[in-house]
Length: 229
Picture 1 (cartoon, rainbow, N blue to C red):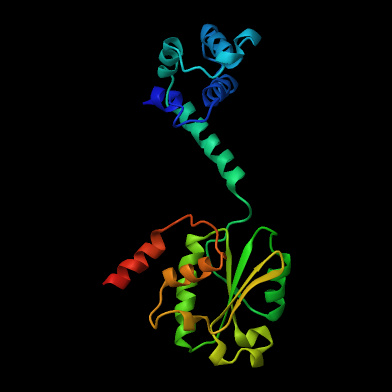
Picture 2: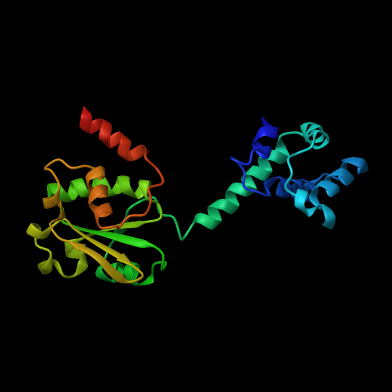
């Protein structure tokens, strides 16, 4: 219920009720009776000698009054709280897909100019190599699982240094952050079974501490189901 959500300290941080009262006061409609406005004001601005009770649980009077309000204000308040929480927890841009790099210049640009907090994973591949195609599929999945990581791929020929990336060293994964090379894995699929999945790539990168905490599970859970079948 509304009362339980906003009075249970195990669910809400200390002070959230007072924040809710102030939010209600700021957003109160002009048609609300003066008596109700005054009650909201009293709830949101406790007296100096009553500060120790600023975070008290809702009184019956408050609860009955708020029960009369529609759900719109509550939903608006919850949305605002979630947005503020997301901003506090977000450490950089979100991507959610693999970016194709068309040239060596684009490769250098993504390494040198990306957000300082952003981890960049670059897959160097070659058309027609089965393991590279599998890796592309895995990274498509991981890009959804880890939207704060920028996953990229570039054809070895497009790098301008194709002689350094012969088929026997592909697929290769390079990991950067703030322009610094954190991981350089050539012929990376030698570490995986013949048929490998996003979970295998994820476990390998996690072994080296190169992935943040996962935010979503849907894509890899799907791959695991396919593996079982």
